[in-house]
Image (tube, rainbow, N blue to C red; front, side, top):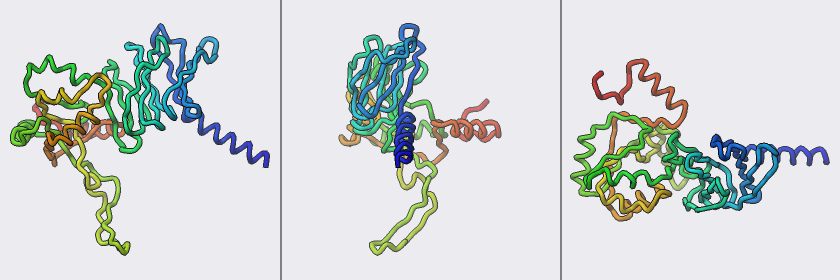
Length: 283
């Protein structure tokens, strides 16, 4: 029984350790520190990598897991899966300076090379959120005119003129391109008696239309973005939909996001084979 209990404890310990996210900073000023999330007591441990001692414990949200550090901005973002929010740390003082409410569980986080964006994987909705007020920062460059917006991590053969045309006809302030990617699961229609009335193998989009990331926006869109920590896919787009100010342009042609290594390899294979359907320009 003692041996069995030891095995259980060891298994729990191993599982717990695999959930710890460890980050080694490259910034000269803080390259001697490591940040470790502790789900059990809702803290982040700051470890001195010279002495290998915990020099500070930071109280964050519930069940912290993912973490990313923005070296140039001296900021740390900690995803708290239990409280559905992100704690923002000033890595110079190791103090919490802001809490970003998400209303969903942030599983893991990372940033782009220039640190203008923080990407957050959404545990429950199976998508990626983007933190950053970079959209509002372009306002001064738009000249008060309509502008086009895209994430830059997906390719498609969308007819831009038709997209803009759909936007103009709709009279809305934001048009989002929507697509139905290849489905992942077989779909069934089931009666009240649990009889399978219809079966369809992996319908496109699993029956749903998703945001393809190619948008047309009017200046009023900026009014829905509060600040740098605003997640565009949450309050801005959700607010536009609630206010009935968003239009969907249904694209039924080629579209593919490049979120994973497999996506990258698949797209490269299409290019090498001379089959890049998103290449609508001449060489």
